[in-house]
Length: 531
Image (tube, rainbow, N blue to C red):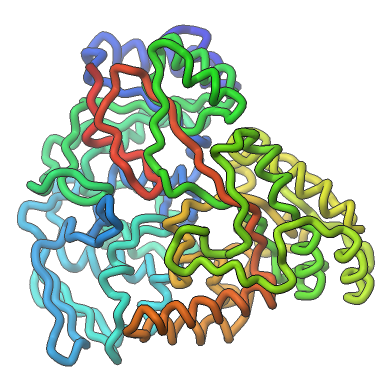
């Protein structure tokens, strides 16, 4: 890796701290056995249960394994599980783990580890929380068998255990999974295909993973996140490069092999650059959203949240952030258009900015000019521009905006704080979710309306939780569709969040790279080869 890229990646850490690591890798490992990947964001938080941040989820897929996984067609398939059964009364689920599963510290994966991991996951995840309401108890009759004993039948057991994206029910050692969900874990030991090199981790610069020689892959061919996970590299380096132009220079020069989310401004140039190719490993795309903090003024008032939604116009977000017509799409539904529960019957929310109407609504709601503390991540190119649009649209509607800029890692940390905005909290932030994460009302984090134990923003809305419980009991597709529409109606009435348009975000790889898997937005580092 060349010196100029290292300097950009290290930032304030200094070149001298990272250069020896890379130099050592180059002398000890053949180049085709090292894969250098530029993630879409800085990896600052390492606990995939504590946060829903995608960069943390992607890190977790490197080192942890899951009980079930989702294939390329969206079907849930066993991963760590060998066999499973459901009793005739549909209330006792029995699972048998595959033999030979082992954590990176050499200890076997047991049913005790699974139960502890599932309990911690369910304490944080929206869908896990719903599943937990059905569970009477867990049982671990032997080291390789665990059971879920339900209070009543539920049709979401396998869907929840096979949930592919944030939060994912990753399996950790029981002693680590015993950490309360509200606290971050301090050890990062899994049983997955790669081992995290904590001794080489340079936050803001470099994360290193080595091949787990003891990983027991499934025999099936890889498909999506399911099936076998063949590893063709001895070492994978996540190189943190925040500047889009430096990313472009690095991959053009062959200094890195893959840039997860190149700048949209570079899209046309990348398609024409020799030695590079565009690969859209997540064709279902993503959705921009604005999340409101329901705890503090002014967005503790649902009428003021509604006014903010009326102020929002999706086209401006797509034009400003994407700028490539073929990659953007308008969609009013909170469930992405093209998915099962998509519904553009959205009442007052049209997806077209109406500042005059929003001003009327603010006046009626008694808005007192309380500032909206809006956070913007300056270093996350894929969403860095949309807060600028939000600021403009909110101000056009009569909101006073306190616009605060920070890096993404700081935003992720700050959005977890329930303090008042003036005391280090916040009122609103914008992000993007992959379609797979928000196409089901039980999986959508923004519909976790359990107050203090819910997702960042902490909405307390029992009606949503009741409807979601009914959805979890529903047995027919028609009933689920009807309930999903009712859930959307309540979500819009209470303004859980604002959907701000859909888009695709292709990745760029070197031409000598092959084997990128089609997944629900996860850059899987297995099955990839570099010639």
